[in-house]
Structure formats: structure tokens, C-alpha cells
Length: 331
Image (cartoon, rainbow, N blue to C red):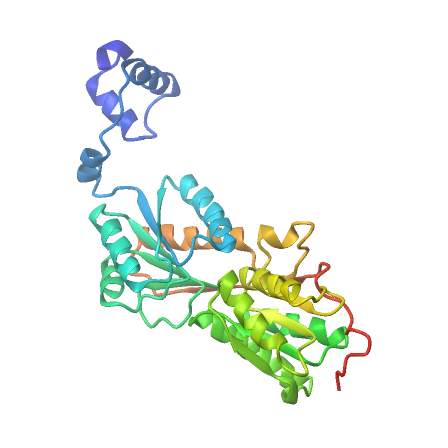
């Protein structure tokens, strides 16, 4: 390759390592020669020399949730700018899959880990965070000195949802709680605080769900079978809210004429015209960029004190919410 490019072997090595101490003219000569010869650098050999792989492993709780996919867009864009490549694993809310995916990442010698919707509670994950720079997104119940955290203000988001429904005259406002996690717990606590602040404690209704569409459908059926039934439902996320919309249709109810529905996350699904879901927006791409910045910083200095970055949610009003149905016994 050096002969083809008309340069020395040491200069070829500098170019392939991405050294900035090479003129653009010579860099292009080496890259052109590499393309013509079909050369691909040996990533394993390079990682042994540099002591880094430039890989980041992202473990996601549920890739079926559009929130996570949209977060990963922001994460990947920023990591790419830092010269890092992204590997993705899906745990499907299964601790065994979590451990298996992290073990695979560690075998590949990733430079860092991002745990999305997953708290490091198993021995495997806790051990991994002790020697691998790690950022956790969406979970805050973490007492590990070297793990950075990016979260949304879930309590505030829940209060925004309840306040909006109260402004429309709703009192029988129910909440479908998500899977066991700090995000689900904080959203439920925000709902409870807001209901009590509006003197609506007698109308509190909480049904357990699991962050899935089917879980939302089942929980909504249970809530809407009550007498009197709720006139509004605040769902733990947009996917759960889709299940609520399905249940309302199955029970012959119109949204928002008979039932108002609020989701959480403001995923792309919520803005689809025939869904038009009122929801609480988490700035997903901004959270991804923040996680990437924290991780790159920690890779450079693993001894930093753990940091927490909290983003502020906003309510996005669409057509799934409206006034209390006429004739509803809402007192």
C-alpha cells in the first residue's frame, strides 16, 4: 500500500490510525490506495495496539418501544462524532438476557456501556460497571459511585398530564402504572401528588400495567369496567396509551368524546394523524446526546464522581383529550 500511495510505511500507519499529523494530500493518497487494493483495517489488531476498541454497547429494555429507538438516534449521532461505534442489545425486560448481552459486550471489549431503561442490579451488571464506563438512562435508583445517570423529571411530567385533564373538568382520572422501575414509580407518584393537590384523592384509581400495548389494553378494560368508570386515563407511556385506545374502541367508547387519554414520551406514533395522542414529551435526542457526552467524558476520565443530568418534560396537546363527557357523573 505504501508503494501504491508513494509514501513510507510509517506514514501509512499514521493515516490508518487517524493521526492528525498528516497532510491532507498524503492522507487522501493513502486512502485512495487502500480503496483500490480493497484494504480493510484489522480492528482487533488495532484495539490491541491502542488499548481501545472504539465500541460502545447499548443495552435496551425493549426495542419495541419507539422511545428507545428515537433515543438511540441521538446517542449514535453524538458517539459517531466522537469516533465511537454503537452496538445494540435488547433485553426484552428479561434479567437473563441483560446479563447475556452485557457479557457479549464485555467479550468484545467495549469502551463503554449505556443501559437504557435498565438499572444495574444483577451481579453481572454491577461488576461490569465497576471497570467499564457506564451511563444509565431512565433509572435513578442507583448507588454506584462511577455510573452517570440521565433521566426525565417524571414526577413533573405526570403532574402536567393531570393538570391538563383537570383544566378540562375531569375528576375521575385514572393512571395505568408501568413495569417495575423508578420511571414508573415517579410517574405514579407525580399522578398521586397532582390528584391530591387538586383535592381529588377520592377519585384516585391506579391500575398496574407493564409498559406494553397489551398490558395497557388489559388495564384499560379493568378500569373502564368500573362503575362509575373514569372519564380520563393517564398512561405510563405512549405504547400503553395505544392499548388504552384499543380497549376504548373494543368497548364502544369514543376518544375524546367518552374518554380522554394522555400518554408519555411523545414518540412518533403519538403524532400519527389518526392517533393524535396528547402526551408528555421527553426530549429523546437531547437525552441521547447528553448520555453520549457523559460517556465520552467518563471514558477519558473513569475516576470522575458520578453525575446526574435531568431533562424537563413538556406537555404536547393533541386530539385525544377534551372536556368531560356531557351527562357524566363527575362529582
